[in-house]
Every structure is written in structure tokens, then in C-alpha cells.
Length: 517
Image (spheres, one colour):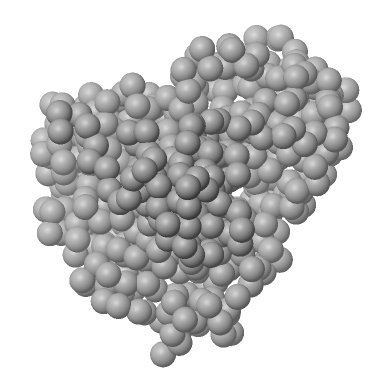
């Protein structure tokens, strides 16, 4: 095998296999035509598709077979086995399909094909304007074109770059393990070829919902027949003495933010992270990978305990401490100087780089000024419609009714934002698709990834299967006997199964994954 080649596993599907080698409801990994291929059977129907997820290259054979779809175990991307279409984010590109048939008493995989999903538009707005070029906005634009929408399509983004893979900005890219060419979701040619007009580095001044018009800061105006607000959220910049205007005090949201941290880290020796949430801790891990001394300051007694509970919070703290991170918990930052940070408890930490990771705030000002209903986010219904006709909202800025509880929630997760953007696109086209997303996110800390599915703002019990300290566990967050969320370490399959069980409301299946104790 020469350098760069991938070793193929399993049976040779070109040579053929026995017809009963793939039982009903099961998948089999093999290879054909020089690449990994996944065979799946549902009743009498056989499917053959490429076996690698187009998002981050996850092994689909280790995923979950649901209906006529396969779900990736890494980040829960979902593909149609019939067409190869990436039907749910975070994957945006399809997988290849192969023809499979019985020949001389064997199942044989023949040529590759890429099938096109049938357009399902019932409504064809003359023009669509998307305000926001992040996860939700980009996914919305892509799906509109993928569904056959041919009208005018504009995406306005305040950042100067094309939409980027935002999770990587605090993970591998910031750590120096991913080159910048991996960061854009698409190249400029992609948008040009699909007639998606990009207004980058552009701010919206005002939205006139009565006249269906978006006014830009440079006095240009964009008329719309349908408007999607995907304005996202902005980092919270705490009012700390010495922070305003200080060149070494940064936040992280955009590619330019991540570049700025990397530039400062090149000469810095000591960094202080203000905030012990997911972003702050991922930045801490990335800066440790670059060799900086790292201190984390936060008012809570354990990092992430509000989201993951005390046991997982203690595990995450110990994991970071193993990698040299020093925590200063139960206190806040009082002042920032040119080379130090003073804490409320009087402690002084040397620092030539300070990163604020104190959360984000939804960008609701445009919607509020336009008279659209807001309440700690843009309020939408189950179809992501706002209070104004022909205006939808998606992503970090939207508060929507979660199907499992009916409560209005706003979730700041990349995969959720992309899926909401896709749902908004379908509803712009009149497909009346409910937003029944079961939220999912992942967080990487050194060589440990935490997967989390569902949404639990509070709970009355936490049940654990496996051993957290062994990095092999599933943790269920429950209230009144109902599983609201589940976090997993080293159990990707269990997380996939939990997501599917939550979608169908199968509490018995969730209790089989993690038994009540």
C-alpha cells in the first residue's frame, strides 16, 4: 500500500457477497471500486453508499441506521441512503450512492452515482434576504438552492469572510492543528455558481417590515418577499477596569477574533481566561497546546456544573489540571493591567493575554426596532415564524418551543443553528416543517470529547452508566421521571441512540441506555 492510501476493510462488494450477509435493519462495511462502502438493508430494499461522513470524516458504519437514513456517530450528521443527500446538518455535502443488485446468486455493488433530491417547494418567493452569514444563515441559503429555489437570494453578513466552521475557531484551528484553508465552509466560487449574493462586512441599519425592506448602513436597500433573521449572538464583554481598549484583552466569536488570539499567543507566555464555560475551556486547551501558561477565572465553584452536573464538572476540571491549567474559582476579575490581572480576592495573576469567555448575548436589536416580538431572543413558533408576516428567525438568536417540553428555549449550538437554518428555508418555501430538533452539541478538551443531546436547564436527578473517570460513561439528566438530556464520554453510539429515542419520545429506550438508580 503506497503512502496516502486508505486500507479497505470488510468484504469486496465488487466480487459479491451472499444475499443473506446483510440482515434486515443492519449495515455491513466493505469496499468497492477502491473505496469504503456501506451496505444496508431495510426489508427487501438494499442500499449502498460511501461509508465516510462528509463533515469531519466520521465512520458511518459505526453510526445508527434509522428508517432509510444513516447517522454519523461523531457529530450526528444524517444522510439519506436512497439519495445520499445530507438531510441534516452538520454535514452539508452528500455522500455517493452505488447501484447494488443480485448477480449470479450474489449481491454485487456496481457503479457510483450522485442522486439529486427532489425539489419540494410549494411557495416561490420572488426574493429572499438572509441577515446573518453564520451557521444558520449559510445552511438556509444552501438548502434554498438545494430545494430548487431559483429566485433572488441575498445573504448579508457583518463579518468580512465567507461563512466559516465556527466550532474550529476555539478547537483545532486555535490549537494550531488545522490550517486556515479548512475553516471556510465554502469558497467564494460556491456562492457565485449558485447565484447567492454575498454582502460581507456589511451591517444592517434597519428593517422595515411594513414595506419589506432591509436598509444597509451604506444606505443601500434590499427588498424582500421573505426574510430570515440569523443574526446570531455577540460575545459578552464584561465591564472590568482596564479592559476597554486594551489590545491584549480579546473575545472569541469570529475568524478575525481567532486570528488575533493566535497572533498574541505567538509572543505571550501567560494567558488568563475569564469564564469557565465551553468556549473558555476550549480556548484554555488550545492555548496549552501552544505552550502558554493558562489560568481560568470564574465565579462558580466547578466549571460547567450548571450544564453537566457536579460529577462531569469535576472531571473536566481535573482533566484541564492534568494538562497544566490553573483554576481560580469562586472569584471574579477586578482589574486588568498591561501585564497582570487582579482578582476580587486580591490575587494578582501575571498575564500578557486575556480572553473573555463570559458567554454571548443574542443580537436582537434589529428585530426589536422593527417591532418583532423579542424575549431574550427573537420569539418564533414551531415553524420558526416570527410575529411579523414573511419573517423567520433561526440559530442562536431564536427562542422556539421545544417539542419535548413546549417551553421556549434559546440554544447556542452550532448543529442546532444549522438545522434551524434548514428548517427555516423549507418553511420559506411553504413546506410547513416543524422545528422538532433534539439539540446536540460536542465539546473537545484535549483528547476527550463530550457529546450532549437534549436540553436540561434543571433536573432533580442525575443517573450514570459506566465510569466518568474512565472516560466511558453516559450521564442522564432527569426531572419528574423524564430524561431531558444525556451526555456521553466514549459512547458515541449511545448518544446517537438517545437522540433517536428522544425524537420518538421513547423513555423506555432512554432508561435502557442509562438505568434510573
